[in-house]
Image (cartoon, rainbow, N blue to C red; front, side, top):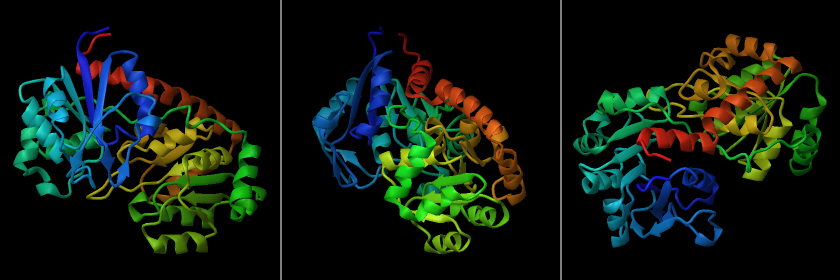
Length: 367
């Protein structure tokens, strides 16, 4: 075990849903995790933690871009850390503060949601200072790496992508008939979906135009498929369009209900678009579906091909390519083959154990 310690700073450090990540990383290196006690109005409760996170007070904590630690303990921990791993965007205030504290000492920045829009889009001198101070900047996918470079990050400081992870303890298979019965009992409006011929296709995520879900309405009209969708509504007109095409739209589901939802499907789809100011950074929902025993397809955008395999993608918005892929996967044997490959691929690259190994490699920590 290395004597050097990795200290991770993250605004979601107190979110117990992510503590499997810390547990796996702590198995292979000395780890300390720090984060704000309150974030976006939520107060994190240590009694729910599965890993001993150190919380600090903060101000302007309604957004990851603006929150600033307000306790001296943070400054001491960040300054003294052997290696500081900042899981924040490089144009955030806390990343700038970390860069000032750590200048000339090992500091890694993991970028999850950065895009070309806003914050002077590459002309921000403070963001460029963060890039200068960082040892490495770690993108979620290759598209994000390109965005980081256009915003001012030197190519030699951009590391290979490290994806997100999903815990198998949170998302695992429920037998399909049992999942369908449970989903029908809680949401009676889906009852007819499981009585029709053809596959049951599902989408989980924001009901939002950049997610590309207008294609679901087209697929429902042109193929013998039943389609279910769930998620928070950001564009009301899309709900009307989906309903008119026969797509059943459920509300945003909690984790346990999501597990049931994924398990009830034959196939999951993430048809995101690549827009000027937004792109699908990773596609975590695809992994959740795969771990629940449902193979996934999606558009060739952002991190989606990295997660599900390029052969299971179609050009964003291309209805004919999407139809051809779904026709191929209407065969149960073919879906089983894809699921087998995707499960092994996800285990190898995106389990929290795999993510921990990748962090260990990029930071050059030894076991």
